[in-house]
Amino acid sequence: MPAKFQVVALSSNDPDGMDRHNEPQLAYPDALKTAQSLKFQGKAFRVFIDGEHSEEEIRSFRNLGGLM
Image 1 (cartoon, rainbow, N blue to C red):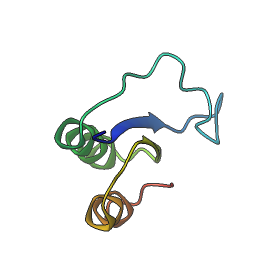
Image 2: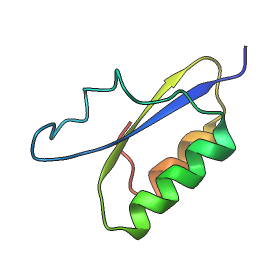
Image 3: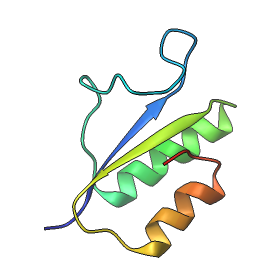
Image 4: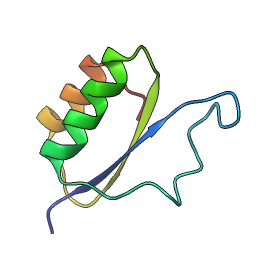
Protein backbone atom coordinates (compact mmCIF):
# COMPACT_ATOMS: atom_id res chain seq x y z
CA MET A 1 0.00 0.00 0.00
CA PRO A 2 1.51 3.35 -0.98
CA ALA A 3 1.96 5.76 1.88
CA LYS A 4 -0.49 8.58 2.49
CA PHE A 5 0.75 11.74 4.18
CA GLN A 6 -0.94 14.40 6.27
CA VAL A 7 0.86 17.73 6.58
CA VAL A 8 -0.43 19.76 9.53
CA ALA A 9 0.59 23.36 10.22
CA LEU A 10 1.42 24.07 13.85
CA SER A 11 -0.47 26.92 15.49
CA SER A 12 -1.03 28.51 18.87
CA ASN A 13 -4.32 26.60 19.10
CA ASP A 14 -2.62 23.30 18.20
CA PRO A 15 1.12 23.71 18.91
CA ASP A 16 1.78 19.97 18.58
CA GLY A 17 -0.10 19.60 15.29
CA MET A 18 -2.12 16.69 16.64
CA ASP A 19 -5.55 17.88 15.41
CA ARG A 20 -5.57 16.34 11.96
CA HIS A 21 -9.15 15.18 11.52
CA ASN A 22 -9.81 17.85 8.84
CA GLU A 23 -6.50 17.36 7.04
CA PRO A 24 -6.54 15.43 3.74
CA GLN A 25 -4.43 12.34 3.21
CA LEU A 26 -2.12 13.10 0.31
CA ALA A 27 0.17 11.18 -1.99
CA TYR A 28 3.86 12.02 -1.55
CA PRO A 29 4.19 14.62 -4.36
CA ASP A 30 1.20 16.62 -3.11
CA ALA A 31 2.29 16.35 0.52
CA LEU A 32 5.77 17.59 -0.40
CA LYS A 33 4.28 20.59 -2.24
CA THR A 34 2.15 21.37 0.82
CA ALA A 35 5.20 21.15 3.09
CA GLN A 36 7.22 23.39 0.76
CA SER A 37 4.40 25.94 0.74
CA LEU A 38 4.23 25.99 4.54
CA LYS A 39 8.02 26.36 4.76
CA PHE A 40 7.88 29.26 2.27
CA GLN A 41 5.22 30.93 4.46
CA GLY A 42 7.46 30.52 7.51
CA LYS A 43 5.10 28.08 9.21
CA ALA A 44 6.16 25.05 11.22
CA PHE A 45 4.48 21.75 10.38
CA ARG A 46 4.19 18.11 11.37
CA VAL A 47 3.91 15.18 8.97
CA PHE A 48 1.92 12.02 9.69
CA ILE A 49 2.43 8.95 7.53
CA ASP A 50 0.13 5.99 6.99
CA GLY A 51 1.61 3.12 4.99
CA GLU A 52 5.00 2.10 3.69
CA HIS A 53 7.37 4.98 3.02
CA SER A 54 11.00 5.40 2.05
CA GLU A 55 13.81 7.01 3.99
CA GLU A 56 14.18 9.49 1.13
CA GLU A 57 10.58 10.63 1.64
CA ILE A 58 11.19 11.12 5.38
CA ARG A 59 14.45 12.95 4.69
CA SER A 60 12.77 15.37 2.28
CA PHE A 61 10.26 16.46 4.95
CA ARG A 62 12.95 16.72 7.62
CA ASN A 63 15.13 18.82 5.31
CA LEU A 64 12.23 21.26 5.10
CA GLY A 65 12.09 21.39 8.90
CA GLY A 66 9.07 19.15 9.35
CA LEU A 67 8.43 17.30 12.59
CA MET A 68 7.68 13.63 12.29
